[in-house]
Image 1 (cartoon, one colour):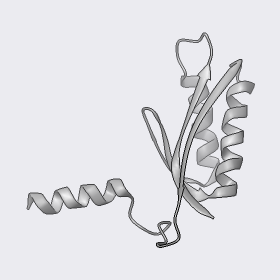
Image 2 (image 1 turned 60 degrees about the horizontal axis):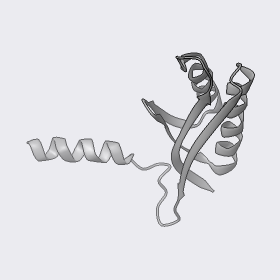
Image 3 (image 1 turned 60 degrees about the vertical axis):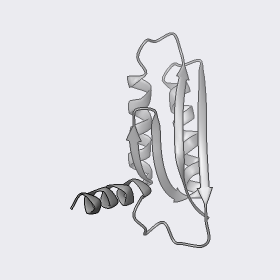
Length: 104
């Protein structure tokens, strides 16, 4: 099953900065091959459900392995059968195109 969604990894740690934890998460996402876009409060992605679950586990484990005593993961998933959105333009891209067309 192909899914799209968003993941937010939250290290629970006394550290002020999450950079070292999220940098590892980004490395895992890059190596996985998942189509993804990182933003300030999480990462949007598309890919095979089994791969998403595997990457989620790896990301959470990396935060724990990097010294955080706890980690929270917020995961939103969607799947559909009426379209092949693996080849479709993202919603954000559609909005950008719409705004550009409307401006002309």
